[in-house]
Amino acid sequence: MQPATPRKPQVNCGYTLAQPGHVHYLLVMSTDDRLDFPATGRNAEPILGVLRRVLPQQGTVLEIASGSGQHVAHFAQQFPELTWQPTDLDPDHRRSITAWTADLANVLDPVGLDATDDPWPLHAADAVLCANMIHIAPWEAGRGLLAGAERVLNTDGILYLYGPFRIDGVHTAESNAQFDASLKSRDPSWGVRDLNEVAHTAAEHGLNLETTIEMPANNLSVVFRKTA
Ligand SMILES: C[S@@+](CC[C@H](N)C(=O)[O-])C[C@H]1O[C@@H](n2cnc3c(N)ncnc32)[C@H](O)[C@@H]1O
Image (cartoon, rainbow, N blue to C red; front, side, top):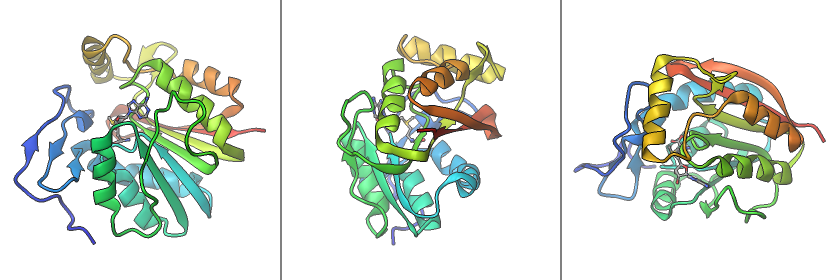
């Protein structure tokens, strides 16, 4: 089993968008391949509480944009009966995922997956998870995520999203508005998505908005279920 925290020395190799509640951009690299996304470590437990309510008892959970791999490492230990398939676009992130999950028998090797690809390199899942990706990527990645979830999920399968959202075009907190502005200054195609637009596009892909749950730091858990 890996030690609880990555080894030192640590090198700050991350973005500079960090602000309270959204410091997942401040990433730290350890001497092994494990990246440490501080906010990911913090939000894993609140997300786990929601996953306990919505994940199936058995099957395969496909995580899109697994990032450092801290989430999948944490969740896989809590759901040993589920098989976890992490993915990410970024090879450095995939190396980090491998390092964080090396000793976990129910975590498959990370796969290089761009959410915009059609088809995805993976073809079936009982649940799809994606945290903190759709606002830090062009909306095409969000659209690709919804289209891909439609392709891989069975009827009644769930898509779980986590992150900040606007509601009816309005930010839910001033900190989210500032965060949105900082994202757009970095890349105009990025930005906090409107839940209505996400839900509308999801519905076009047979994914019905089932529930939204307020999370710490002005984030939401959003659960869609595939209807047919
Ligand atoms: C802020 S990180 C979130 C990582 C992790 N889910 C978490 O919550 O800590 C965003 C991740 O999205 C990935 N990403 C960005 N665009 C993507 C795309 N089009 N398809 C798949 N992954 C993507 C990045 O490589 C990065 O790992």
